[in-house]
Image (cartoon, rainbow, N blue to C red; front, top):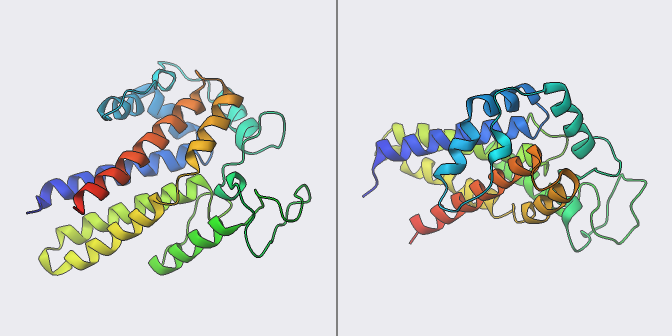
Length: 226
């Protein structure tokens, strides 16, 4: 039998965490700096059932300007350190039909802008009546995390409404499952960020936490279905 108060607490905590991660990966350096100074992301990492290095995310003082420059170099401005923060860019196979607005992309090759991952996420958002406020594209990591947070929050509120809303709560859990199932690209994203930012970089640590949190969330949902 489900422990409703605990389920509500867990869903709300996930919503808060996904909101923080979405903001940080959408360039809100003030939010990330505050989380680094208060140690909240390191605390999250410590609760995970696997050991990861999140030490770069704990600082007493943070240079927000340097953090902002690092973010732009990694995720905004094409250059030697640029890593596209969108799922479509990390596909191994081209989407069908081919459609890309990128002048640097060869037709019929993978990694096109607004590929199948973007279409899939757009369909999920439409089903949920959700309009992402973060990320420039539907498959941007910040948009996907924002959606996970919104679905977790909606699940919590449905659970609070009692047994009559169990079906609604399950609907939002299904949306979380489907979104988490579309985040396999975070593995390649993580490796690319680590190569560009360094293994001890702030954004490497941030993506490490993000990748691990989503993987264990997916595992928790899978185990709850058994």
